[in-house]
Amino acid sequence: MADEIRTRYSDEELAEFREIIENMLAKAKAEYDTLRNVVMHNGTNDIEDTSPSFKTVEDDGANQLSKEEASQLAQRQYKFIQNLEQALVRIENKTYGICRVTGKLIPKERLRLVPHATLTVEAKEMLSKGGQR
Image (cartoon, rainbow, N blue to C red; front, side, top):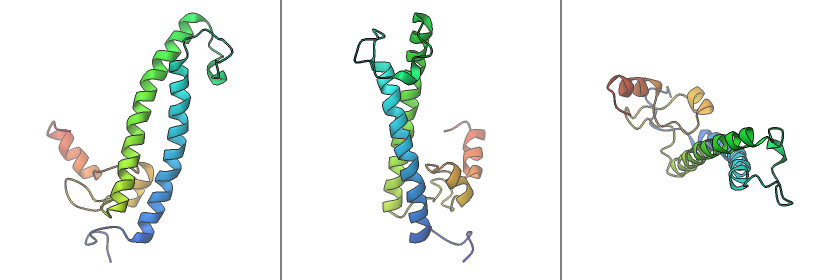
């Protein structure tokens, strides 16, 4: 059956995407936890400071900048985690990989790169030209 006339991905294909998403989700959560730890430590360097990966920038200015950046990165990472979790819900509902604008299947190549995508490239371009999001 050609992709153009298919209405959804097969259970086997959905299982492949689930594995990709679950792996990404595990890495994203670990990175989020690391970023949160950096943000939560106040720079006292006491015995409870457990973020050695950020100790290379220990002067006060660089340390503060690192925490501000870490806070922004943590917020972005949290949103990414939410998007991945929503993708898992769509897999459960068997609606994963269906463009929310066109109703067409999002190409596998796009989903492998951006597994939380809800738009085909065509729909995304159409929306951006229209000034919508």
